[in-house]
Length: 329
Ligand code: NAP
Ligand code: GDD
Image (spheres, rainbow, N blue to C red):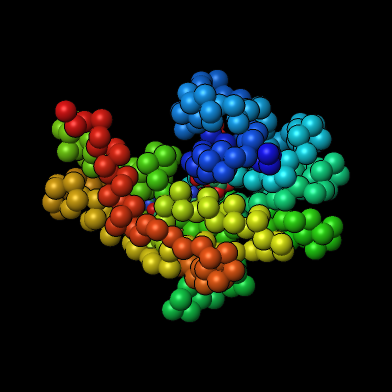
């Protein structure tokens, strides 16, 4: 039985990845930081099922703890390691830049160094981000590729770029099997409630249920390439099954404004014009914005045979249905 270790296992991607790997017969060691309130809602179903429970073990771990990761790697010698944990909210990274950077940049380095030292055969996945492109203009009509110039515009993105390059350095210098997935925005019913898509689908569900009448939002004009998280964790796994480690763009190759996402959700919910409910709040604008993201996943399609199954409208409908389900009598 293969063993996989996942940081941030109780986050959106960590939980879908744990589901996927357990379904493939892996023993999954999930790493989670200690919080004062229990926040295992996204993985509780794994514990509740006796079969998946027997393939799952949780340990406490924080990205700041270099000694802990050495002990965990030494103990389990996992076949695969997925570094998913991060302070992942771009706007928040302007409020807590040092904390965000320490976890993502130095935390990644601590893990890579621990793998090199005590478990060099472990295959490593780095959660890189399309946010790293920032306001770069180095794209064509097909979008950004793995080699497009990156011009990050947030503390989060600068830290992710540091981790991205460090992964490449460890791959080349020490011949680690270390790959980075440059993932464009991906969402799901498990998406954190303060990211814009989930904020919109939750608000639409509550408005339809008569429990809310206003939705405060910031910039509606930025464009994102939105896919489904369940599709994207398959790409992570596929990267670590290749003989050669590499970097891959994972995206749908379609881009939409936040406004278009709103229109799809409010239309599908039968609420009509979103302008009746949405107010623009200047506090929700960021000091710097990434205006446009479109990813070209041609390499992932060719090498990994990976393709997304959901486009933005299908994703938006899935998320709304999930958020509205508790209100259906
Ligand atoms: P998420 O839902 O916010 O999950 C992040 C996870 O990291 C949570 O389990 C969180 O724990 C944990 N974490 C945060 N700080 C930590 C620390 N100091 N030590 C240990 N664990 C810590 O994020 P996601 O959407 O699943 O994204 C997964 C990864 O992909 C992140 O690295 C993100 O930056 C990156 N990414 C995401 C997207 C996207 O669109 N979703 C796109 C590109 C890249 P708590 O639950 O306790 O906060
Ligand atoms: N969160 C949020 N809340 N965003 C808003 C709001 C709001 O009320 N109003 C407008 N937006 C706009 C943001 O300014 C941004 O342009 C867009 O909606 C998307 O914001 P988020 O959903 O917060 O995602 P993100 O693109 O900043 O970052 C996500 O994707 C990155 C990959 O490109 C995160 O998942 C990152 O972790 C990930 O790396």
